[in-house]
Length: 292
Image 1 (tube, rainbow, N blue to C red):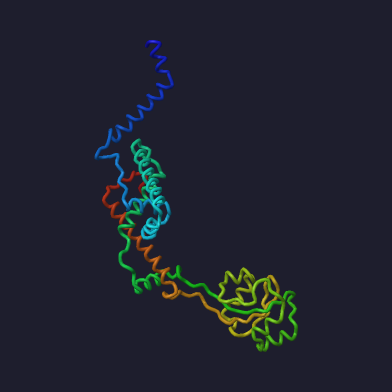
Image 2 (image 1 turned 90 degrees about the vertical axis):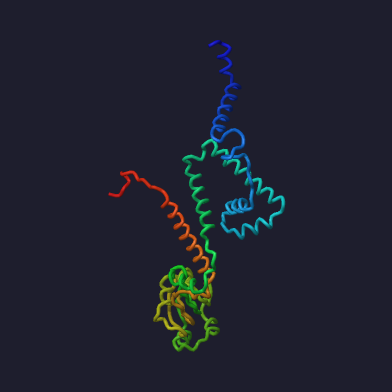
């Protein structure tokens, strides 16, 4: 080979142009030169495209809210959103064109999510569940809608545990009303009155032993009991209401039940739709993966 040819081939500019031409040739071979029916260089932006794109950006797949958000945008905000969609679409097509999407776990997961989202929009329930359906869902999932136990009480606190004889007689005789009782004792670090508080809340203020005592079934309601100990000192307690854990009524949690029912319906319907798609494939599993 002649010396000037060798120098030309070693020239950095030639190498850059050669690599660029080679890359262009690869891309052209994959999608063809110029617009084609298989991969046209045309992007049609529909409202559905933008709404889907917006939901992914917001991280919440709620078509009605996304549409309201889109309609509330200023013309400039809408143009920016469309431009972002177009840029993303171009990058996706170019990446696919040169094979960057092959064997990429992140891209595969994204495609799976988009396919599940597409299936969800198809199988989403079109009929609003009535009270009978919601009541059945509530009964079938009591662990989701169970109301925790609670207690309501007033207490008189003695820091050093020494209760005056006069106060003891009043507590034992059960003649003290709450107003008169709270004029006795010391100032408690938290509250004097607790209304419909859960075991976790009471325990955070009084400790586990005190909590177990006020929630015990044998602890009388409407009568002063004590002395009860806590890490803070001694307490005399008047329980006025205690509620055992129970299943919430439909009226009190209706919207929560509705949302959980619709989510469960969609999840089950999507799973069934995926299984239907899987049934259309011939699945071959390597022998070494089969269960013995």
